[in-house]
Image 1: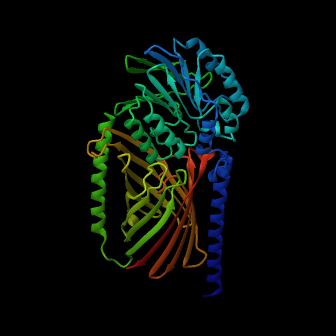
Image 2: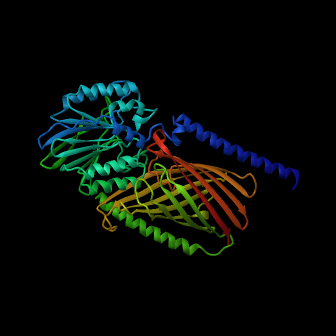
Length: 286
Length: 247
């Protein structure tokens, strides 16, 4: 091989190596500029098994006071409080319409900041009815569980009056974790109430090509839905999608709440009525 | 209506897969460039990093088409399925058009079927992909058309079906330090971890050694487990080895 050919091959190899390094650097810088926590790829500071264990040791939310067999409540999700205020959430006080309690389906804060969590706690305590809240993925950002634990356990079960049970699950990481999955099965198996309602932040199915996330694994979705069916869950409430959707999964009603962003024109919530063993879910605009 | 649509989509997809496999087989004539490769691997999947699997694959690569078939068996020690025995999980077929398209472009169709025995659910994915590959850099993108159904043991009569679409992509690069060795790095949001999250990106390192007529390849993949990269719970990884030879 002559010198020229050898030089050309070397130049080609250098060019390719350069392009390869450029590709790697571009990818990394793109991730960084998108505010992606690279360390998050290898384990966040909070994972579902740890939060579940902590939640079990916390004081559990009180049952909803005895109600008539017919009752109603509000399911609201994706508040994304940022800047320590949420006038719409405060305004729910005037829109209760005889709802006995409120369930908040996660993404309470935008970035898990303490000031936003504290604001939510203050507003929830002033609303006049019990507020039951679980967390979403945004509540875990930036070590958010350190702040969000002040809201209370991330997964819990309460009795609603004499005939219903509400179970709130922690799906902030897009997965239940084994401990929570086992607990859910025990809770559903031990539930003697006629109506069972389960609330999660994450929804189950992709509706659009560019939806970013939901329950991470189709296998877990299948396992969860199978559990719901086996133990006769009547209503599955979800958030996260930021738009309203409803359908039946076998005999179970599946409803996704719209987002409840402060001062947003399309902010809304679900008004749920349980009357005579029949569940009605109504989407209401704020 | 949506339920019926998903059922029909699943039936049509099954028909397409069988048809394409037959069509590809008819093209697999023993020409000089034909390659037969077999592979195996182990993986710890991304969901909470606790489902271990074994992977077997075979690929027949002719000039016009590539046909790849894989069967995967997972040890169901997963926190999700909570079984203790090995269980058949998925079969995957991939067909590429190779030289049908001009220049660096390639079109591929990938299909994958999974059956979750304990929850009696089936997931069928059909992914048409368009690739641009200039060796040192490649990009591949497409849509994952997926039907999810639950059937209580009656697969042809599910009580629930959902039809989903998801954008998928892969970007990667390769270098060839010597004429026989190729090293690659890629990021992708679709692979055999089967994560549903568009934002859950996997990293993969590839290494291939050509010892004509034999080929040895290895893949190492890492993917976060969790809702998004910002709230990941941990990592899943995969390791695969491929052995092959030119026929």
